[in-house]
Length: 287
Image (tube, rainbow, N blue to C red; front, side, top):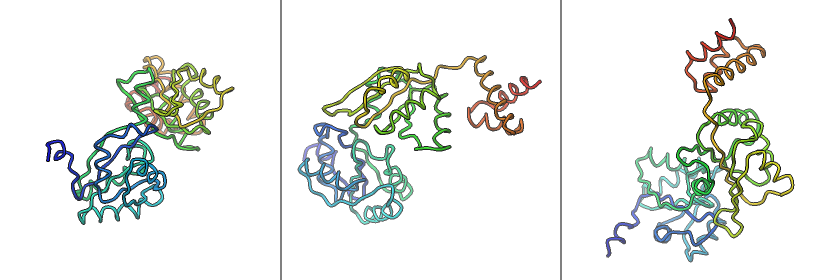
């Protein structure tokens, strides 16, 4: 047995996180093929899609479904099989499992049970889009899919509007126009954005606009395919701008009936600014 074969040996009682192609089947790695062919069973978000993938790779393995709606019951079942000496490969519909994916719960469960988890790296839509975006890659924040609607969505948009790191957001085509409109409302129309669609597929396309430019483009173009949106981080606020933001936010909260004390608590929670700084600014503007 060669050193390489020994190093990549599939072990019993191990959960393997196996990255799968996000569009181009040729992106599967040699190590991923080896692990998928040798584990005792495969856990997949959608066994139909993943079964088709395995078939195209020339593999046939026992499969179990593991997704948002059954993870509470299926997770412990997988853990029990791992404890009994079986090995399992966890895969998602595309890309890296456990990233914006129910697999994160299974990894946490393995960690709590002392079960070894090993990674088989490969394609990841978020990192691929970031590299293609033309925006800063030095510091970034992965947001995945935003909450669908309501207060939770508004809060998330409010939170990330101040984020100075490059933002990465997943979006479906039927929600893209609404999301771009909200970006303009919360971030402003001049923020730069890269829209990366159908990554690694035949129709791969990278569009780079301002947010306002993207809105204008999609007034006459229908969104198609799955999108990764990469948005420029917020410019660093000057002390003067920060003071004005605190003052205006406090005024709005108190106008709505909130006490000064509660307004300060709310702003601290929203912005992450030191309480003494917020208190001083609110007090200064209410003198």
